Length: 287
Image (cartoon, rainbow, N blue to C red; front, side, top):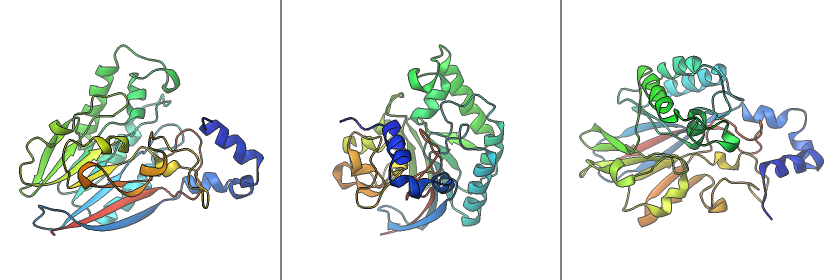
């Protein structure tokens, strides 16, 4: 049987789980968030590196500038070396100016820079996808480039199958969206040399297809399932691998370590359950 978000929501509202999610509790959980800290050694690194990973903001439908402002304040308080945005900055069904989002992202502070990749909902907003993402547009590529330039104006560099040297000992690469873009992992890592590598991929379903080992991969997209239950986990995970890459620490091809964030925003339904939004602080150290 194919389980859909609509079916999950119908079962929540009609069954015993409505008690847990009723009274706005599920909605409230969607607007809370925490900072999770993860210490890990990264091969090739010669000095510590702190990475703040924010993904799946989904600004526009359920998420407004106030939520983004709180995430930015919390991130700046961590004083990370670099900020990575894991895609789905926009919600596909939004149809209002991105200026409030851009103003908040401009406030992010990180001495080594701020980098982003595209997600499927970003492409939906550009008009690439059509169907449930909204009306398909012939000018979607121009809209994509216009938003990339707007992000650049806010100090955020979009990495679409390309990378940058953050320091002499570390390289960050960003991969285009799996569903609607043209992901090219080798291109994202070209130029890394013997540096430690951090690879940003929106969709963790690319993990089994890594063409070679990566030092660390960070992913979003799944929201951890967004709605989870004791014992059974998430009835719906937007992955062809089911629960395998739902959230947390996993492994890709060649044993590459990967972290899948629960993300910050919401899509499909405006609630979460037992799946708190997170800003992930990755405290990376030399082996």
